[in-house]
Length: 322
Image (cartoon, rainbow, N blue to C red; front, side, top):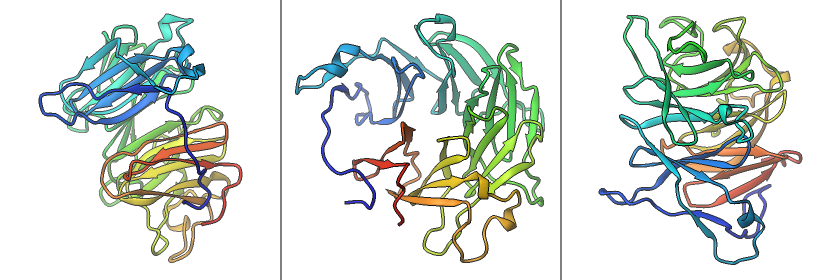
């Protein structure tokens, strides 16, 4: 077994079958829970985003056969969906908060309501030559007033109440500059530290920005230790005020970072050939492809899957050395 991973078996209580598709093999490319835990958003290879309601009774059932969930709504965008996320205060107790955003290749950002998937608003990112472009990653600000979107060497900010063009452009680096380069493939807002955002690049770097600095990192994280060099960042999540988790493509590890030990400059984040000071732990997770393998952290448990079809759980409180 894996060092530090929980061993054993688990009982499946809910199951989503493979949706019918003309091409066949309509596999899932990712799924996310709504913040209230009552809605599941699942993305499949046919570029359809399907919405499911979670039946409370099934979670407590002793039945050995899992209940098959059927979508109550589905969304078809104009191309492959690159990212999606729910409104941070999403709760069915207040239907006005039940919405989510999507980013699709070759299309602007869409805000949709979760009851039917109907389009509510459109946010159009314009690049430096004033052409509409698409975002690779998305997140909301903690107060739900802004949408942040990741692009190649840019983060662009949108006002939720003002559909249309972005209200801010954060230039992360120029071609010859020393800032964070590459496509920003992962974004996450720090809910316990409003104003802080983590941005992961396919160019193998992870930076933390403050909204007041507009593109100047307050923390720079990278793992270039021999035999452990990290791949492009495909997901980043805040586990606490100072603990940051990152997932990577074509990599053998999930990483936990301590921001209290981080440097704000790329050259100071790690001495050549030495383990980074800010790197708390590497959790084994083999991903041999460019696919985005998701993970989740809740109640001190890190849960992820790997390309062997395993579901793996790690403790964030013990973090055994690897």
